[in-house]
Length: 360
Ligand SMILES: N[C@@H](CCC(=O)N[C@@H](CS)C(=O)NCC(=O)O)C(=O)O
Image 1: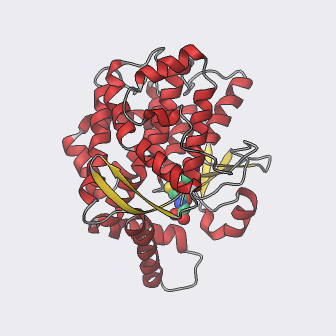
Image 2: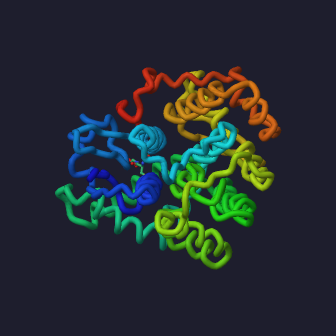
Image 3: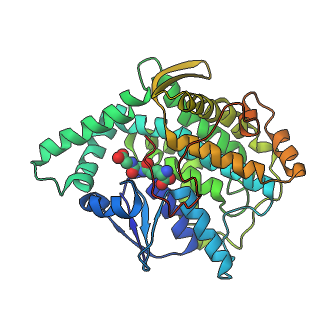
């Protein structure tokens, strides 16, 4: 039995839980915020999810955590329900979709949660109890602290303004539109069983978009096929058969890949550029919308660095296939290193055992 240090409404905890449930890994969940010193010492940063194993090891950061667990399953001969496609090109595209889900959809998911009054009030209540029960202050004060912190960090502090709000909201609709193009032809994004692309998309889709009052109403009423997909991934252990992932990237992935090029890769480029120039804030224009005063994040430079490493590990033939799938402006960020991506994080590539760093 492993312990997941997590939060019941958390983006990345939901992503990891979707994976653990699919794999049939039993876990108990505990709240890390009452034990901050312990978590900091063992895992580096107080963020969720963190796995504590019976041997006393701590795993932090959902992407390398899932990679390690898959590798350990293979080494122990348990090769059913694998989430990494065996075809190297499909695997790379699945990792790119995971990264888009992890790092691009975050702003929009947080904005729906904290910009809309009903969502904000409900989530303030839940988080006040899960994050601050150990704080010796009346609940109404703790509620105020939580609300203020989340709004400052994840709305005003992350470039969501009256000018950008419509685009931030549209980000969610675009994600569902490009998923639907794929899901019209098969039950999961890249096959008849879930891949890391589905698990990654469960981050924003599960605990935020399909649960928070405003986006869940939109999803349920206007995009029921996505509501159905969320439940399908959540219940995949019971219903999906033997691992069956595609051996080629289907044409219906093109809208998803174009969307990733126009959004996520623009953000990666501008963030990496600003990081190497030593800036702490940056600006970017995405699909005609200009975002200002965004926090530069070292962690996202690391994500780009890892994506480039995955690409560099491909054979020449597979690299050419990936490039053919990504003919859109800006995709050369993955193979052209003119914009530096040297994060300085986890240089020895010890993750998920490395000490984690917060995204912001
Ligand atoms: N890259 C990490 C990100 C984890 C993360 O940022 N989790 C959020 C909650 S969903 C968090 O703990 N944030 C800390 C905070 O808001 O202080 C992962 O994939 O696990």
